[in-house]
Image (cartoon, rainbow, N blue to C red; front, side, top):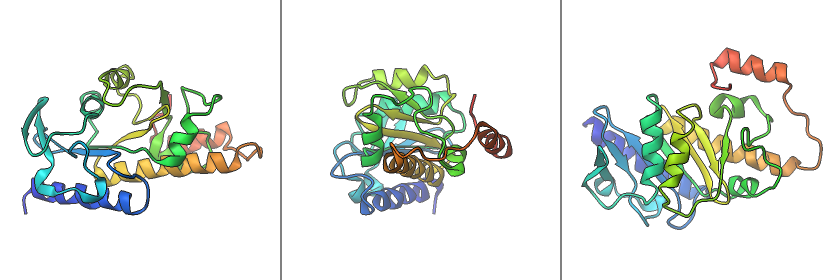
Amino acid sequence: MSDETRLRETLCRLAASLYARGLTNGASGNISARLPDGRLLVSPTEVSLGALDPARLALIEGGRHLSGDAPTKEMALHAAFYDTRSTAGAVVHLHSTHSVAWSMLPDVDPENALPPLTAYGIMRLGKVRLLPVFLPGDPAMGEAVRGLAGKRSAVLLANHGPVVAGRDPEAAINAVEELEETAKLALLTRGSSPRLLSEAEIRAVVTKFGVEWD
């Protein structure tokens, strides 16, 4: 089995898992991965993540659509992560409920959108930047990510959902699920004065696991 065939099947399997567990609904969300030669495999536009066909994933090279169905309209968002983060091997964007709900709250810190509730939230995400509201498919989303100069692996689009880059599809999936669970915990404990990780505890996690934090 070639690297490309294996990656196509992996993307579809992981996407179907997200859909089956209610982390994306309808035809929302999109997923992509970078092949060893730099080309991108991208989920098609208006296709459920629960019904992706490995043979019909869009193949992109240098911004050109080479084969497969038309790629997601959020292509600029994916490209921005790949262009600014050399370690990015996959990008996942969801409209997951708790993350979207958290992004709507008025007191969320745009520079560090999620409270430090667990060590795993910090390990897998670092600081999550809250970006403004954009129309679906607006290239300005990609420009906003480029403006971060590769310093963030995860962003939360206000009233829209999370976008996470990882070294491979499994890492990106694990990270976006951690983001959703952290948002869920934040909502469940909101107003209850939960115990947050201290600055010393955060710094210990950052140092031990080499997390991008500053």
